[in-house]
Image (cartoon, rainbow, N blue to C red; front, side):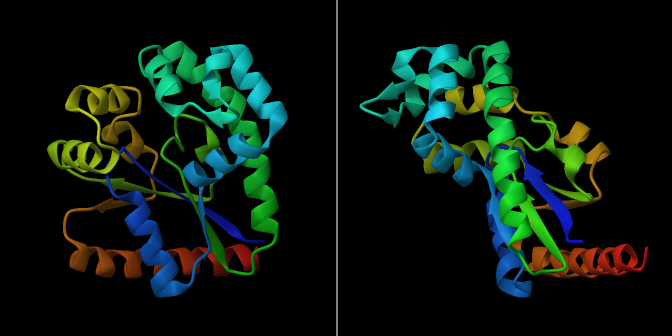
Amino acid sequence: MIITVGLTGGIGSGKTTIARLFASEFAIPIYIADVKTKELIAHNVALQQRIKELLGQQAFVEGKYNTAFVAQIVFSDPAKLQALNAIIHPYVQEDFEQWKRSQHSPYVIKESAILFESGSYKDCDCIITVTAPLEERINRVMLRDKIDRETVLKRIKNQWNDENKIKLSTFVVDNRELFRNLDKIKTIHSKIMEMTIENAEN
């Protein structure tokens, strides 16, 4: 049975960069939940309808997901954000399980910004949390998404803080210096491989 490794971190922590290192160094299959979520929303009519029922018809413009409109609502209303995640999560989880069944690897990585918030961490065999200094994260997201500081802080406020994530994590990667991360990731990979052997023996 393939082991599921959850990989998460606050917005701007660089978790996708860490995930790609596992793929490039060890050929580990990576499921990037944020990317898959966008694909599912774009193509699943039933999911689109449920989002419209929650947020209104403006959630889609000419058939395309109105991310700016949705973000404006949910990042200002935690209850709406929770409700939206509750709608989307089962679709993503089902898609992940189908994807996982098609993989041929000792373990796979599920990279998700809301691994803890969605509750999907409970389905993982172990968890890697990526951290980075707050100011660095803010600057990365402002540059990447072309948004202002206040908008970034609103998004951060709606995510679990690092302390709570670390308490439930198997491994932690401080994503400040890439060359050090390579050594850290090699160590983590070795430990996960030990888990896969133990898993096969039980």
